[in-house]
Amino acid sequence: QMGVEFFGDNSPECDGEVISLAIQSLKANGVDDVQIDLGHVGFINCLLDELTISKTDRAELFELIENKNIGDIQEFLSSRHYDPKISDIILELPMLYGDPTDVFARMTKLCINQKMQDVVKNLSALFEHLRSVGLDQYVTFDLGFTSSMNYYTDLIFKVYAGNWGAPIIDGGRYN
Image (cartoon, rainbow, N blue to C red; front, side, top):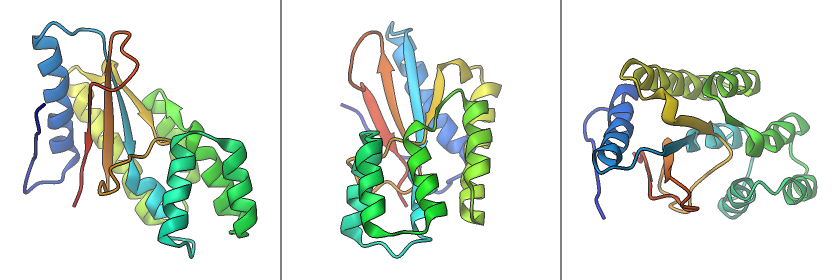
C-alpha cells in the first residue's frame, strides 16, 4: 500500500501528475494493461447544491448513482419532488461515462451553474495535460461514480489493470 499527497497546488496539472505517477508506476512494474476512470464529485455536488437536500438524502443519492440504478434513482427523485430539470440531469449522471471528448460535450450541456462549468474546464485541462505527456489513451471519464470515501471533494479516480475486476488503485482530491 502506498499513499501520495500533493500539497499547495490544486491545479489540473498537479492532478495530472498524480495520475501520471500511477500509470508510470504500474508500467515500471510490468503492468501495461491499465485503465483509469476519472470522475469528479464536485460536478454532482454543484448540481445538488441547487436543491434543498439533507445529508442523508445526498448520501443515499450518491450510492444510487454509484450503483447506476436508474429505477431506484427515479423512485428516489419522484418521492422527493425536486425540480424536474435537476432530476432529469441527475438521471443522466450514471450514464455519463466513456470517451473524454464525448463526456465533456455531454457535461457541458448539463451545466446549470458556473461551478459545474468550472468542473468541466478543470477536467478538460487535466485531460489535456495527460494528452501532452502521452498518457491520454489510458483514461476514460465516469461522472456516474462517486466514492465510499465521502471526504473527496473534487477529482476521484479508479485504476484497473488486466482482467482484475476491482480497482488496484483509487483515490481523489480532498480540500
